[in-house]
Image (cartoon, rainbow, N blue to C red; front, side):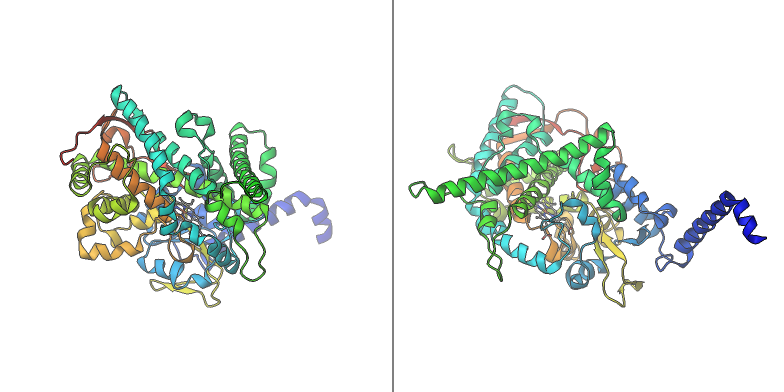
Length: 526
Ligand code: HEM
């Protein structure tokens, strides 16, 4: 009788089973899951698609920051994911406890079959790769390469001088971006990409497209591999553009590696040729595995070169643009920076293109505070830096037990805007806060470059660029906003907020161009 019933109503039975499974799943996730006690959006506790959607809005870090404002320092932002802004989390996740907390599958979306240093989840493989690279990113090495930055700053100064002579407004964000891409080419591959001179936007590597694709697909780890395979087949214009962007970056990386390998082969075959110029890639080509003595494969070299282009361009230019943004919107602070440069650095001679990083770094403490404050208020590497808890007994953060297997992350924008750590005025761009001893001790918590063994390997390159650009450009030119005043430019800005309208593809940037006018300065102190 019961069997007959099943045969007569197969659809109803299947529907009923599905219904009860869904209800069971929802009840489990909301009330019985080990993370059920942590607050967060209802949908986020059920599916990673919530986080996929967040990245698609281009507002992921800012929405997450609002969730922390509402719920406190721990937010459940995925079925197995917690975002944390408690001060105690920083050391535990990224420094002292990092051994038990490797990167999660989120990072798989950032590389190909062979992960690069950024995407590697195997910590021992990562530490060997990091050793291969560390010399190329050291301060002494970057100083050796400074001459190549100078050549490019000279080009940038020439362009700005022309705008100034013609009283023409221009997009400083674009000018800085072009400069940073060309210098990355010089440092990493011994070749400029020639974007500053050609002013050709089509040469800009489509880093944003790749980053967005990676963030969106990585946010749904269970599907990342399938999405990588199937999404390119979907006939959607926007989606196609993202994949074409990724391919263009990969092709560029591959070309750079080929050019370099050929140059090295040619120079070793012809004994008469001059010694080859060094660069980050060449050092990596020459590096050997400490145990096996093997060199990296061409595929490995290409994935690393791809990583340099992705991690090293948009990040530095967005950071420098935001620093200009803050100073332009606070003319009093801009004036202090300029006065400090005039007092502490001699005017550049005609044959000098830029200040050296040593001079700028050692004599401009106020600029240093402005840079730090820019990193705090508007960090650009804003994706959640997700780690998997692998201690069998879990971990305790701020008295809360976080079980084995949980994906935990700090989003630096959310953390830098935690009022309990940085004060009620955390939305204010106030470089002088770093003179207060209590706040100064918090500098070690700033997460703009990440922290611990996986922190940014390129930070010296980035800081060198920012010091040189700021000191040289502010010494040479007076800048002013060409169009709207701050209140028109910003939209998430409230009466107490210096946070401009930003967009994020995992990496953040000012949403709009930064239109400025420049005038050649006559220095008070020659
Ligand atoms: C202002 C500019 C920059 C910012 C804000 C920045 C930020 C970051 C952050 C937060 C991380 C850690 C990611 C994590 O824990 O998952 C990171 C890693 C990394 N960055 Fe940067 N970065 C910048 C510039 C650069 C430059 C110029 C390069 C090199 C050309 C670079 C190459 C890398 C690499 C290779 C990693 C992976 C390191 C590892 O896992 O060992 N970055 N960066």
